[in-house]
Length: 258
Image (cartoon, rainbow, N blue to C red; front, top):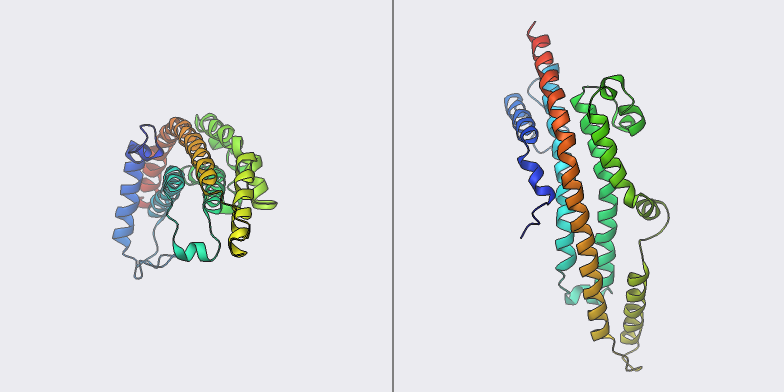
């Protein structure tokens, strides 16, 4: 069952529904010759109004995909099935947990990046993706005078919660904490004994099972709670962007029709 305050609820936001629908209709009108390509090959070049709708729709879709990943990771953590093939190559529950915890922390940082790209698209700033940074986008005079800045700063402050851990993963080493480090040690001892033919007669299976259940429970609760916090903060950004979107799309439509 979905958490009542999950990020999934963002898909029903009026701005999301409108912008995705308009972007989809424009894409359908342009009729890509090869829809499966990463870079669309349209039957003709989109005009500026169409380009705007396509870009906003894509940035929204990218943001929602990131939200989906954040929403799903707590479920991935709680659902693990060890197979003979996994066991044969030494993959265990500890590594599975670390993989998804690291994925979560990286995607939290990615959420901020996707929000900034969406802001850039809605304001039609046309910055290169590499320049869609907090310093450049939020300092733009068009953005500064709206409520978008305040809403984005709230999200950035939340993302900062995991910034140090994310940077460690990306630039230095794998994620770990005391509970995961202890669990890793037990797995290593158990695996070493298995490779030695079980001569040492050590069996930490039950202890590992109990420790794993505790780690998964704590991490799952932590991430679900943080997702709910993000889900409560994001609508303010979407609402402030919808006002800008309504003005920009009408302005561009009038421009190309002139």
